[in-house]
Image (cartoon, rainbow, N blue to C red; front, side, top):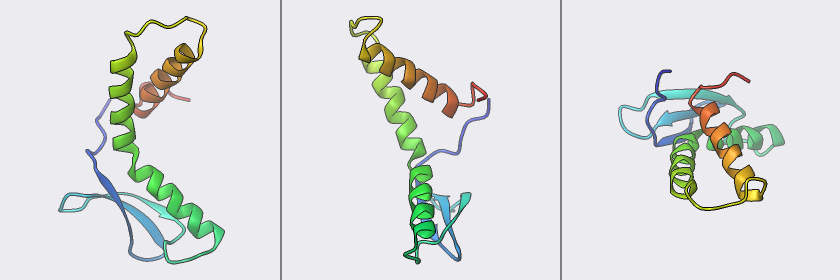
Length: 102
């Protein structure tokens, strides 16, 4: 599976869309998100929230991978909340890496 564009990513508003770019120059566009930063209506605010979440994806993935590695050797019951959290973390990491198709 190909690797994602390295982070960090940032949000910029150049027109009617929020854009997610690489933070390092030259900026590479990651995606466009409908709903501009300048507006105050619900669609614009939702667009900004979506763009902000997308822009945080590289850091979120790295943090989850690090947390998973650091805590996977801790003893915990197989049917407890920590086990469920680790299963959810593994699933999210696999999805972000493109290792599952759902």
